[in-house]
Image (cartoon, rainbow, N blue to C red; front, top):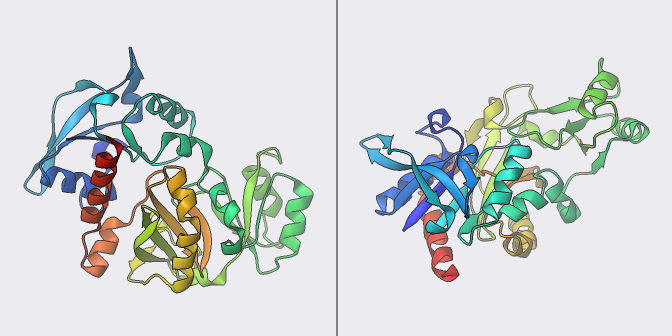
Amino acid sequence: MKWLFIIDPIEELNYDTDSTYAIMKEVYDREMEVFFCRIQDLFYYNGATCNSKSFFLISDSFRVGADKILPLDSFDIILMRKDPPYDMKYHYATLILSLTNTLIINSPKALRDFNEKLIILPFKKYIPETFVTSNESQINSFVRSHPEGIIIKSLHSYQGRSVVMIKKDYENYKEAIMAYTSNFTSPIMIQEYIPKVRIGDKRILVLGGKPIGAVLREPLENSYLANLGQGGTPKKTTITHQEYELVNEMSNFLLKNGLYFVGLDVIGGLLTEINITCPTGIVHINKLNGVFLEKEIVDYFFNLIKNSL
């Protein structure tokens, strides 16, 4: 059985903590073939194709094989594990991926259709007060109605980047809004500030529409950014009844759209975004709880492959 992982440059990944590595190693340990490529290695010539390399484990490291041009249809499963941003290069990659009959996690169509910020909007019962707009007067009105502050996000931000807290007396308030909206021409997401972010931002991994584990990301002192890429610290946590209810509510939506493996970001019980491109947290959850989520994940994907034949 052949697995293809579409990833960032392999030398940029952290072998000890990266979720993609954890899955790749588990697949390799089961004596299945592991290949990887970057999005720029995808191309079309008489069919969707890639210039891939094979992946081999050696002791506590790995080595890669020579370049090998293979049709995407020759793989049993493809895991799209390229980090955002979702730009035009990413977009074109999903179009090429849509030309193969091979099972792809997550669906390239879903990656095109859903933005990781905007995807939460249908679940308004579970999200903080949220406004998506580029209109100056609407933004000003929202800020005035939230004296405790608001959070503004670029719709293409990731790993806590391009996320800022603003109050109406913020010194560079207008300049910040103008920059984020490209002079009030591009929409941004504005959300009420949730004080419980000081406790942490919970990442809940959802596989096949069911929660399989969670990690609390605790921000630095006096910070509202809890993402591990922004200095947050992973802490052990549990999934609450309310969070199980949230996952159950969105389960059919996720499965219907081929979003088999996602990461929910929850603050104080409120859903703030959904990572559908490259959900992480496997290794941290493993270490904090003495589990091996990659085994459950590979089992699930293996069954998907069998059911798709």
